[in-house]
Amino acid sequence: MDILLVDDPKNAGELRNILEPLGHVVIAQALTGKEAIRKVKEISPDLIIINLQLKGEMGGVKTAGKINEYKKFPVIFLTSFMKNCLNKSWQLPEDAVVLSQPLTAEKVEYCIKRAVQ
Image (cartoon, rainbow, N blue to C red; front, top):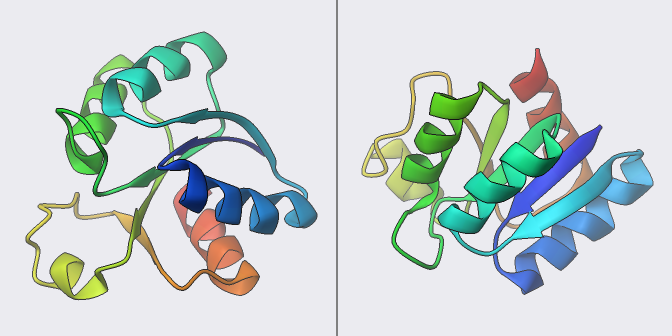
């Protein structure tokens, strides 16, 4: 599966180290929402993994919304703060798939299966 990672380089590197042995390919990385939107139009990934707390003007939820205005892609939201997600402070879509840290191969693969079903 071709994946776009939208996160800081440290988290993206950790995710890449989990995804690639599972047979997935990180075809691009983006640091900000604007960069992610631009890259989606260029590469059309199979899946997007996006941090809820992005640098720049747009957070992860807003970025995913803008991307879905262009084309619907499966999205996994990455967070360190699962409690905030449960409290709906992020205003996640009803069908959102959320991957919380610490990351494991099992959690990542489970979230991927849920996102693309």
